[in-house]
Length: 306
Ligand SMILES: Cc1ncc(COP(=O)(O)O)c(C=O)c1O
Image 1 (tube, rainbow, N blue to C red):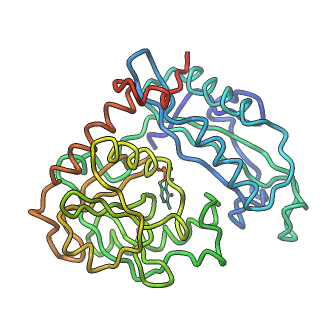
Image 2 (image 1 turned 135 degrees about the horizontal axis):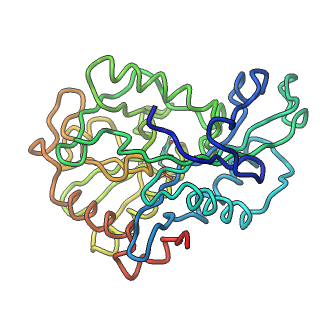
């Protein structure tokens, strides 16, 4: 499976990988009643470091609050420490980290208060979500026939497991059509986000990205915003239409799992010259240095495992 590790942290204990199992009747499995994070650790300048760990952990708690959990048996600082313990115990240098806070011991009446929150943290060595060739060649995407969530139907600021049925629908359709990734429109018909990434458009020396109102507040998006602004680009948050992608100089997507990847083609239309463009490359290179603690002004983003 390629997701093996020595230990998975479960409710305060490091459990051997094979023993980290749940009962079939865990309500989270049946109804998607769980919230999660996707985090990466990198072998940085001074050893393994988790990228923007506090921001990810705070977003996990925010997701839980949005979903309706009211009481947590842990604090943000305890989960930060537990995440680092999990990476250290597994001896990984570059790895993906998956905390999942799930409804357990009740909740069959579809009431969050009927169960209690359990938390587990897994880690494994995982390559790029969009494939190993994505960085060199860029990827091909389509506009999905599935619309992204209406913000008053599913809570788009929360990484709720059940929300990802929408990503499954879009990604499966996209791959079956021969593309690498799906771009979803919001209920108004403007660009929302991809199945696991936010999106940026380059036109001249300006970058455009949809506002966060209908989409996830991506932590990579925020890092890229800072990097691009520091490089002298104007970054504008505004509604982006489908045809603005077709006539863009460059389009790229960003997320923890995918990092920063250029789009070579959308809906069978070549973007720019069909290669990852110079602005994307410049931003991508700084991002790759930043996640490995090589850029002094962004070093605070790296939380060393110790
Ligand atoms: C739907 C969606 N949008 C955007 C992102 C990018 O967010 P981040 O950069 O925080 O990983 C993700 C990944 O978590 C996601 O699942």
